[in-house]
Image 1 (cartoon, rainbow, N blue to C red):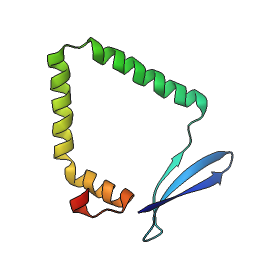
Image 2: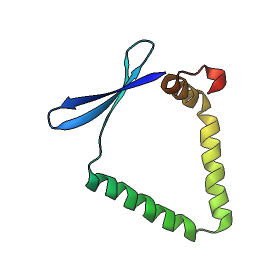
Image 3: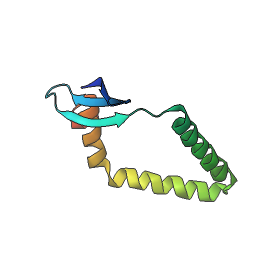
Image 4: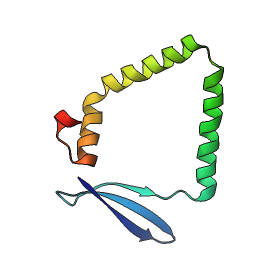
Length: 92
């Protein structure tokens, strides 16, 4: 399992992800302000609009490439899942 703690560093709030069993920091994230969040959402919407214009065949190709990348990196992804969720590898 993991634990999340809010921290203050100068004027920015941070989220620190901790390994619950060891107390070691896993990762630290900063909050997005509203303008940064809006920019990310706008970029995602633009990407979706472009994706919709692709042929069904091309979309299927891209999703197949994504699936292959996930399979290729499954050991690394399983490690991330087990660290974040406190699961054993077979459950990841």
